[in-house]
Image (cartoon, rainbow over all chains, first blue to last red; front, side, top):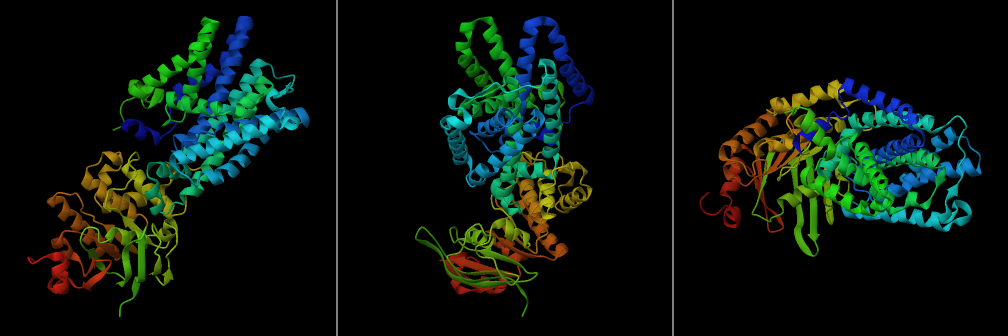
Length: 326
Length: 251
C-alpha cells in the first residue's frame, strides 16, 4: 500500500525508453496484424476496442481512484457520447470529427447536471444515486423509440472512406494518447492534489478551506467528458449505438478494469481493461461454449486480485521492476 | 480593554433534545494564549465544532473579527483566518508529509483550480511548505508517507497543516492527547514557541493541569452546559466552585 501511494504522487512518471517502446509497439501493431488476413483484422478490431475501453476506465478512475468516489453510473456519460455521435452523424449528417468533438461536450453537460445532485451525497448513497440516474437515462433511451430507436439502437453510422480498420485504430490510439497526457497533467496539477486531499480525508479537507462539493463536481464533469469521448469512439467502431452502452453492466466494466489494473495509478485501469478483454476473447476463441465460463474466470481473477494484489497489476509491476521509493 | 478576536455571545446548542450549551458567552482577546478545561463530556470539542462551523448554534452569535460567522460553512470560516488542529489525528494518510502541507498552502493561495502546472513546479508553495515543516521540526521527514509517522509526529503534522493556513486564530484540540510524558512537554514547548514566534491567538483544550496552568494566560472552565469560570491560572486554581466541580481537593 505504502509504496504505491508514494509513487502516485508522480503519476505517469514512466521511464522514458520504456514508454517510447510501448508507444512504438502500439503504433506498429495494426500493420503487423494486417498481414494475417481476416484473423488479423479481427484482432485490430479487438485492440481498438481495448484502447477505447481503456480510455473509458481511465476516465472513471479520475473519480474512483483519484477522487475516492465510487460511481455505479459512469455508463451514462459513455452512452451520451455514443448517442451524440450516432444521432449527429446519422440524422444530421455531421462529419465524424465534429461529432467526436460534440460527444465529450454533451457528456460533460450531462455530468454537470447529474453530478450537481450526486456530489451532495457521499459513499454508498452517492453510488446509488449515480446508478439511479444512469438507469433513468437508460430507460429514456429505451422508451423513446422515435428518437433513439429504442432497443433496436441506431444502425449504419457512416464511416469516412479513408478510415479503414488500421487508420481507425491509429485515430483511436492518437486520441487515447492525447487524453492520457491530459489526464496525467490534471492528476499532477494542484487540482489533482486537491482531489486526492478530499479522497484521503473529506472532513479535514473542509477544514483546510477546500469547497469539497465543488471540486468533486468539477472532477465528475471532467470524468464524464472523457467517458463521452470513449463512447463516441466505440459507437463509430461498431457503427452502431445500442441501449447497452447506458446499461448498469456497462458501468461495471471500468470498475472491474480499474480493480484489476490498479486504481491508484494512471495507466492501471487501461491495462486492466485490456487484460480482461483479452482473456474474454481468448476464452471465446478456445471454444464457443467457454464464453459461459467467463463469469467464473472473471470471479476468480477478481478474487486473486483482491486477496493477493489489492493494488492491482500496477502495484505488482512496481514490486517487480522498481525499487521502493522510501 | 483588549481587542477581542472572537466572541461567543449567548450561544445555545442541543442535539436531539439533549442540551449541550445553555447561553454560553465569553470573548478571547487578540494575541492571547488561553485554554479550555472541563470534565469529559462538558462539550469542549463541541464548542470547537461550533466555532469552526461544523455545527450551527441553535441560538446566539459567534463573532470573529467583528463578523457573525454562525451558520457559515467550515471552508469559508477557514478563509477568514481561523484554523484548527484535531484531537484525534486528522491528516491525509496516503500522501507524503510534504503533500499534506503543500495542498494546504495551495488552498490558502487559492490555487486549487490550476489544472496545468505540475505541483512539483510550484516553487513558492514548496518553499512555504518546507518553511512550515521546519517550524514544527518535520522537514527531514518531508518525503515520508504521513500515515507511517509515529503518533507524536502525526500530531505535529496536524498542527503544521493548520499553520499552513496562516491563521489569526488557531484552535488546538488536545494537542498532547495520547502522547508519552516526554512527547507532551516537547509539544507544549512547540506550541508556546509557535505562539511567541507567530504572534497569533491560540486557544487549546487540555486535560493535563500542569500544562494548562503552565502556559495559559487565561483559563476557561466549561461545566454543566455553561462557562463555570474564567480567569488567570492563579484565579482558577483558587476558585472554590471549580475545585468542587472539576479539579478536586488536591490542587
